[in-house]
Image (cartoon, rainbow, N blue to C red):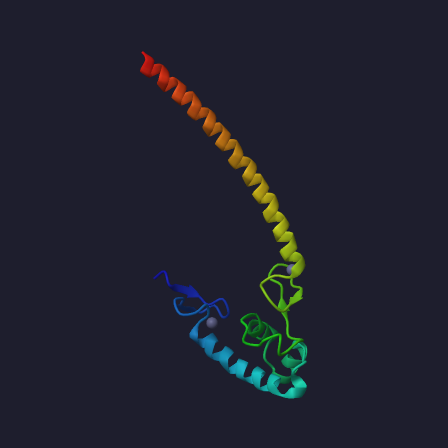
Amino acid sequence: MENVDNCPRCGRLFMKALRDICDHCKKELDQRFEKVYKYMRVRENRAATIEQVVEATEVPEDDISRFVKEGRLKPRQFPNLTYPCDACGTAIQEGRICESCREGINKDLKTLETEQNVKDRLTQEERAKYKTYQSLDLDGEKRK
Ligand SMILES: [Zn+2]
Ligand SMILES: [Zn+2]
């Protein structure tokens, strides 16, 4: 039963193997996507912001964000559609996090890497010392 999980969108139990949300949500989202896409396809609406789309289609902002995030609505075609950064909520159009969060994470990663390097070097040196010690000891044994 490891493939059964609660749908992150509605909380129902569903089979996780096929997709990350349940069938009910998938159907609902598909219908809502059609609605949003129909609206967005109209030339004058291409530059609509999420708020305007919500107002016109009555589709919740979360769902529209999801469409943009999943690439179903392309920011290249619809320049004012955005979704919130996973970390801080800033409006973004690609990736999972915004520029400044990415920079912050990169910095953290670098610090982590440096720390890891220092640790690795230490253990290597320690290991080398230990090896030398062992082989000296062995040689001593052999000599006996
Ligand atoms: Zn669901
Ligand atoms: Zn951010």
